[in-house]
Image 1 (cartoon, rainbow, N blue to C red):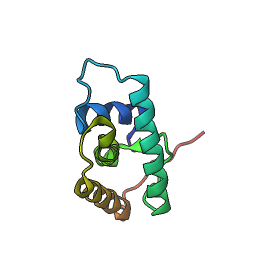
Image 2 (image 1 turned 60 degrees about the vertical axis):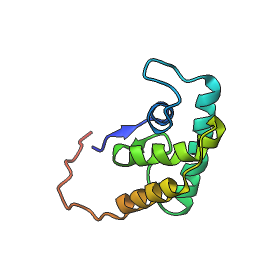
Image 3 (image 1 turned 135 degrees about the vertical axis):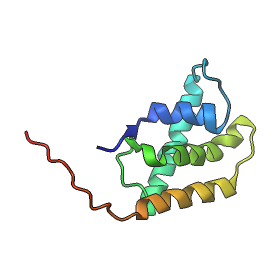
Length: 114
């Protein structure tokens, strides 16, 4: 089964790693959490409209997690006084597009019996 990340994981990673707004010991403020969630919500629906979001909104695939956090980070950067990086957004979207376009590995999938 594929590994997934949650929206709180996305919020923390975006603020810590993609933007460097908080360090590893800090907890994001309620406003920061809300802002990142709002940006992710918009980004998710835009990606879905482009046929790129195949996952449930709250279960982010680990394979694209870093790209998605950086994508959201660039979009919210101006809220923190940082410049928006359109080139980064285009790159991360192209990486998500590559991931989505991969064909099946044809490996067997173990069945689950109930």
